[in-house]
Length: 329
Ligand code: CP
Ligand code: NVA
Image 1 (spheres, rainbow, N blue to C red):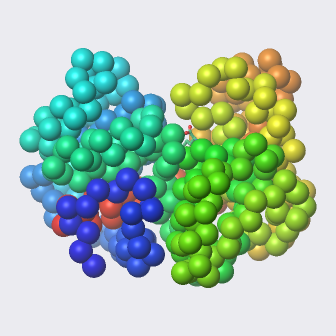
Image 2: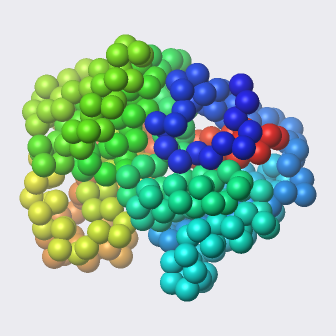
């Protein structure tokens, strides 16, 4: 498997074999890390990390992964560079491509990261756009595989806003890897029909299936994985909160949902999560809209079935695999 020189923008660009290869490579790096075996085979190389939106996991994963591989990193924060304000994406790409061996981008439209990749001349990695979050998928799949021992045939139910980066990406990942994807949400939050059709094509090859339902009982019954994400994503306007709370509250992940899925079921969330009021935004919105927990109850979040911190750790191992494979470690 040779992924050298490739950008990592969406899983749509990768075959199931290539995706599994990256998950396998991440598992190898994880083992090396746990055993204290150094793997700094990219010494002397440097990567740029562009973040037009904030981050904890993705930024730290790229930085730690790069340092473990022996590389240097430069972080460009949401306000500290010329990007998009005084300098176009194409010009930025051509400048950074002369200095760095790879570029991570987190920001708004997928078209921006595509444009960056077109002009950079070095691999570009999508650290989250409005449409997709592909590095998160590798971490999620590694976590699911570690727990169940396999991916094929796993039934994953996504609850919440299934039209955005997480819903889209999980549907693609499941469709490519032979898993059964269900979007269980209010119908205005179903994924885009064109993307569903594209995923149906992948599903024909892999044996996957895609189900869209508003019925919580049917949609979560015997699910192996119950997955949710925040109801209001980064960059969305304040005005959407009221509507999201109204429409998505029936799709909150509760103990009743987990019990309906069964005791074999695990809970995943890309994080950060509003499972209590211990955050500034959670507290403000909670007071305004009278809630104490939002997309998932604290009980589920803190339960044994919740593997969210294994999942968060796996961000680093899987991002390391993407850097290593595309730069030829
Ligand atoms: N899951 C995720 O991408 O987290 P951050 O926003 O903290 O990077
Ligand atoms: N849908 C969320 C994912 C965060 C990792 C967002 O875009 O804010």
